[in-house]
Amino acid sequence: MSIFSRYLLRLERKRWLFRAFRKRRELAAVAARTGSIKPDDILLFSTLRNERVRLPYFLQYYRDLGVNHFLIVDNDSQDGSREYLAAQKDVSLWSSRHSYKRARFGVDWLNWLQMRYAHDHWALVVDPDEFFIYPFCDTRPLRALTDWLDASSIKSFSAMLLDMYPKGPIGAQPYREGMDPFEIAQWFDSGNYGIKRNGQYGNLWIQGGPRSRIFFADAPKRAPALNKIPLVKWQRQYTYVSSTHMLLPRGLNLVYDEWGGEKASGCLLHAKFLDTFAAKAEEEMTRAQHYANSHEYRAYKAALNDSPDMWCKWSDKYINWRQLEILGLMSKGNWA
Image (tube, rainbow, N blue to C red):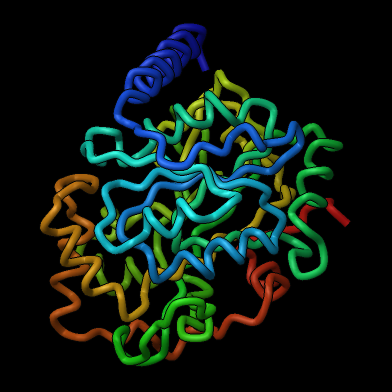
C-alpha cells in the first residue's frame, strides 16, 4: 500500500472518530453503571430495538462465557427491552430515538462508547441474535482466549457469521423467552461460501450460505457479508468502519495467514431465523433504517410470502465447535 493510501486511511479513521464524538449527543443514559467496570473486565457492546424475548438467554449466554459488563444502546424499543435491561445490574444502558441509519446503523454510537469506556479492554461487539463461539469454548472461558491473545500479541479475533435455521418453515416452531434458540435453529450450510480480499482495508469478504441461496439467489453479490471481527483489544484510536466487518487501523483486519497457514478464529452462530423473523422483517421494511434502503429486508419479505424452508439435503446439524473446525469454518490455529 502506498504512502498516500495510508494517509487517506488515517484521515478516514479520524473522520469516523470525530463523527462518533459528535453522535454522543444522541445518546441518553438510562442506567449508568460504568463506574463498576474493573481494569481487566471483558466488555460487550450491542445496539438493539425490540428484542425483549431474546434478552434473557442472550445475557445469560454471555455471562456464562465470561463477559463482565454489557454496554447497550436501545434504539427506541416499544416492547419492554429498555425496562428489562435497565434492571440488570451488569448492564449500562443508553437510549436513542435518533435515526439508526444516520448513525451508520449504530456504528457511530458504539464507536463512541468504546472510545469512552473500552480503552485497554477486550471488547466484544455482537447483535442480540449473534452467539460467539471459539476454540475450546466448551471447556475454557472467554478469559482463557483473551489471555492467550494477549500473550501472543494478537489484538483482534475474527468470527464468521454462520446462519442457523430450523428444518421446516421458519415460523413453525415458536420461540419462547429464555429458550436456547439453537434448540430450534439447529442447521447450517457447511459449504456454499465465497471469499475474496478487500484491497483497501485488507479484510476478507465472505458471502454465501442459506441467505445467499434463498433470499439472494438472483443477485448473490448483494447477499449480506458474513465476515466479522467482533473481539478486539480496544484502544481509543480504533474505529469500526462498517458494522464489525472491518476496522481502522487497517492492521486489525489481518486476521488470516497470508502464507497458507491458519490463524485462530471463531464463529458467530446467527439465530435470526426463528418465528419472530417475519414480524421483524415487516417492522424493518416499514422503518427503512437499514443499509441500501433496507434491500436485505425487502428480499426477506418477498421470500417469506412463500413460507420458505431453508433446510436442504446438504444442510448439516450443528454439534459443536470441533465440527466447524473440521469443516474449515473456524480454526484453533496454534492455540493448543
